Length: 182
Image (cartoon, rainbow, N blue to C red; front, side, top):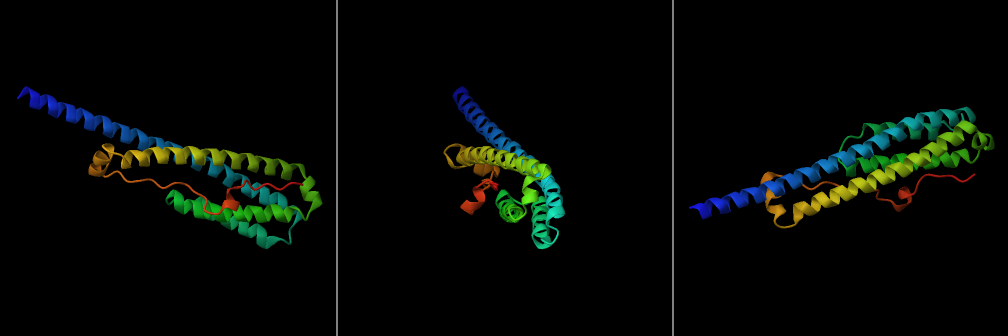
């Protein structure tokens, strides 16, 4: 009788330890994702200033500027899974590349102190986004591993834990920081 109680207590303790580990891993993923979102928001806030600076020099390039703002607004409104948000981020980074390519045609703009400062700030933000993505994806990897390895997979499946999506950029060109050398 006592042996049975000890075995049941040990199994209960084991299940509790596995469950708590899954909760900690899930919370680490949530925290890491909030870091990614904070960096993305920082970039979204920089873009209108950049567009306004370019507008003064390239007023007739309205289509490119509108594409950047539209892509920014779509990415800002994106609240789906990380893989869904990555699609909107791909469009935004492409639009920013067009904006910086456009700036190459305007020597006065390239020399503008405000434009240079915004461009540098955006490049720094892109680096921070990359770091936050790597941190998030590492946490997702650890969490997903816990969901797949025995014995924690038994507890995870029983309690309804599901795998997380990585925040991945599909196009290798999009992975590069959008920088223009003047």
